[in-house]
Image 1 (cartoon, helix red, strand yellow):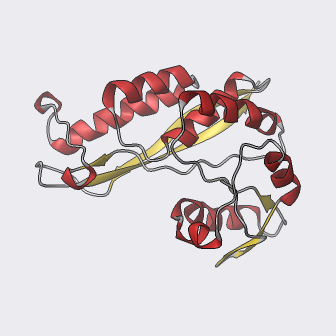
Image 2 (cartoon, one colour; image 1 turned 90 degrees about the horizontal axis):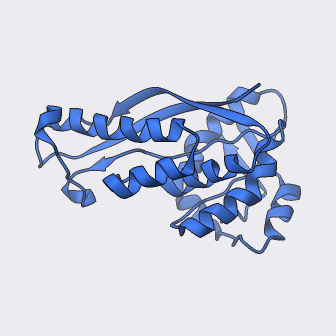
Length: 205
């Protein structure tokens, strides 16, 4: 879904929406528009935008906010192919927003293998397996991982779209995770935890 806004305000400066690219995406017939209330309720974009504003200041850059919901595998492929030319364009930077594992009864997800140690160690093992799948740059590797584990990675469809886009890119991209943490060191099934990871995506010769 695309934003109805013209500008996003951050504490570090405003960021204008690129309506030229929005027009190109809208013409594909594959995108709906959010309502303003839907946009304001969605926090995943907000988490990135102050960093984008700070990184590029004092340059003026435009942004192309896209919110990704639940999609079929065929839809992920279609969106990936559509976005591939934008990935290839070195003027563009893609920022993907997602948590990793949401573990606990309140998330309906409590797998645990005692051989991996404490619950939080098991969760980290599970997450790092997913991170390695993403680092392959292959959509199939990540899809197989999700099918095998059911890991509750909220941005899995956005990640999958990007990996699908890489299939159609002339540019070779390298994905490397560099930081991992958890909101809580879970030790029992009554605990809950959300995992976080960050990665760099760089073009390689």
